[in-house]
Length: 121
Image 1 (cartoon, rainbow, N blue to C red):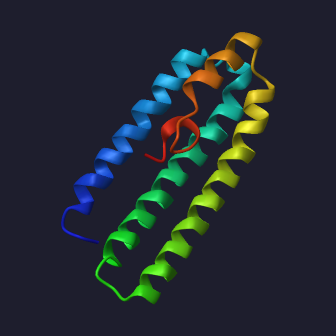
Image 2: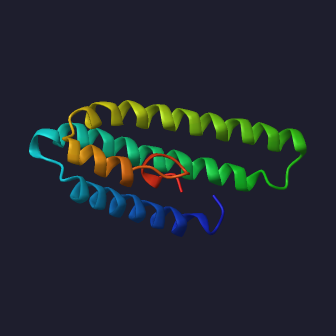
């Protein structure tokens, strides 16, 4: 990893934990929803780690040849797709158990141009 990556990873972890705590409070997750929430939260954490690794690989490939950069871009897009698939699988049962109020909140809070929950920013 590059010399600046370790502090960045710590900030990313802090960001994820803060974002998850915020979402849990705003969505008013109930005791009955805790299992689905925990699955979702673990998926979000793992996804953030995967995305951080992908970003590091892309940064390392910046000075490489065109074919190497294309390979890294392909790998990055694959990581993004797999991440979305995993988050989608974790969100589905959680969202299905939401009240109408929770669904409205989730629809507003858990979407961003960079992916579900804004976790992949």
